[in-house]
Image 1 (tube, rainbow, N blue to C red):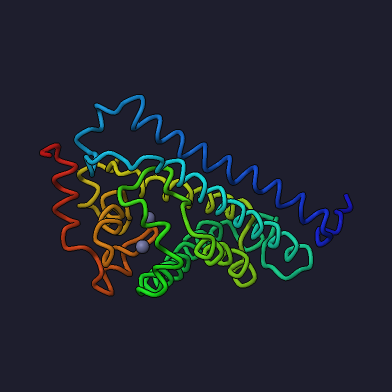
Image 2: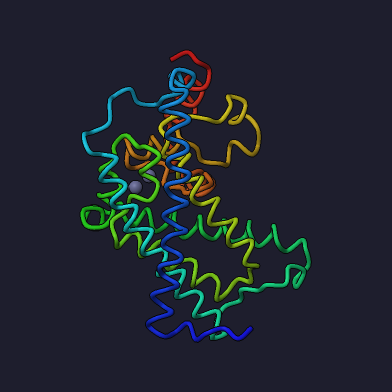
Length: 261
Ligand SMILES: [Zn+2]
Ligand SMILES: [Zn+2]
C-alpha cells in the first residue's frame, strides 16, 4: 500500500490529531484509573500510605488537567514530526522485530530509558536554577502536593523540551515501533505512580536491588516538597551519584510502608 506524503499540512494536521486522541486518552485512562482506585474506590485501604494529609488546593486538578492537555498536544506534534522523519528515512525506527535479533528489543528499551533518565536529570537540575525555574518549571511545582493528574502538568516550554527527546533519540538509536509504544506507556504510568502521593510499592521493595534504583511516590513527593533533592525520572542512580537524593527518603519510605503513620 502506497502511503501518502505525511509532510503536507493536511497530513501533519491529521497525524497530530490522531496522536492527540491517543496521548490524551492514555493520560486520562491511567491518571483517571489510579485516581479511581486509590482515591475513590479504596481510599481507606491506602490511607496509611498517603504521603500528605493536607487537602488539595481548590481547582488544582482542573489546572493540572489543562496543562497536561497542552503537554499532550506538544507530544502529539513531536509524534507527527517523528512519522515524517521516519517517512523521509531520517530515523532508525524499524518494523521487522528480529532485524537486530530478539535480544535487542529489551536492550533498546533499557538503553533508551537510561539515556532518557540522563537527559531529564540534567534538564531538571537546570530548570531548578532560580531564573529558569520561575519561567519554565514553576507550573509543575505549583502542585505542592501531587496527584495522578500532575503527571503531564508542565509549562509549554518544559513540555517542548521533554517532547523533542524522542524524535532526536530515534534518529540515533534503532528502536522497533512496538518498543516505542511500550516505552511511552511506561513513561505515562511511571509519571502517574510517582505523582500519586500514595506509596504503592511494598515495604520490601526498597530492600531489594530493583527497589533501590526505581523512583516511586515517596521519592518524588520529596522533590515537590524539598525542591533541591530527587531530580530523577525513573531511576535513582543520578541522584545517588551526584548526592542529590533526599536524606529523608529512606526513613519516610519505611514509615509510610510499615503502617506506623
Ligand atoms: Zn522540579
Ligand atoms: Zn513532579
